Image 1 (cartoon, rainbow, N blue to C red):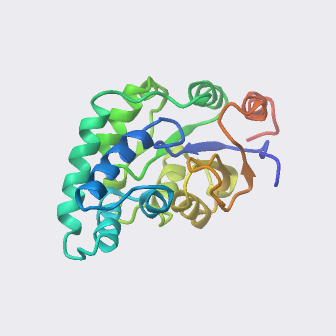
Image 2 (cartoon, rainbow, N blue to C red):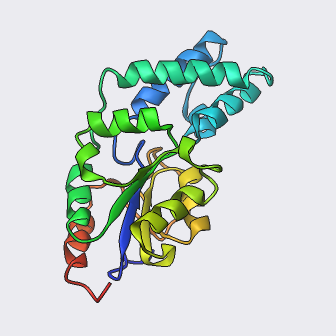
Length: 224
């Protein structure tokens, strides 16, 4: 595992499961859909949908549930259920607010999320992170969301930096694939315990002492 790069010019964060505890909202919604079709919902089923867009998750569920033509129907149901869960609020994950603010004080930052704009804004607002980001990008604002690289490339372009000099923070295989394809340094904090994710740096939470020390040193590091 490599150390976090001190010559970082920008940091791009995923949102769901990384900054904000929205995976609980998604899991409640997904569990309800699986239960309605007589199926249990555990780690195996969660791995099918985590990190995907709402549409991709709906299609994955349709295939798993043996209803290959019901993707659009399940997508609509999933979106409505997640919307209802998010309306009850979602908290920032431990260390998220501190890390985001420390990075923002040193370099440009952005959010690149596979959620639609509606859910991304609700999550950031609920967690008290909305005012931390002047740049955020949602799945329904690009042609090809994660695992394609477009979200990360768009974020880096908006921040005025090259992907090779930027760090992505991710929690899922779908997001990691996107960041890797875009050429960013990949830091992971898996939201699924035990998940084996491709990475350059890996931690167990955003509370890792190394993270704040790294972020605090960016402003004093080599010329960016």
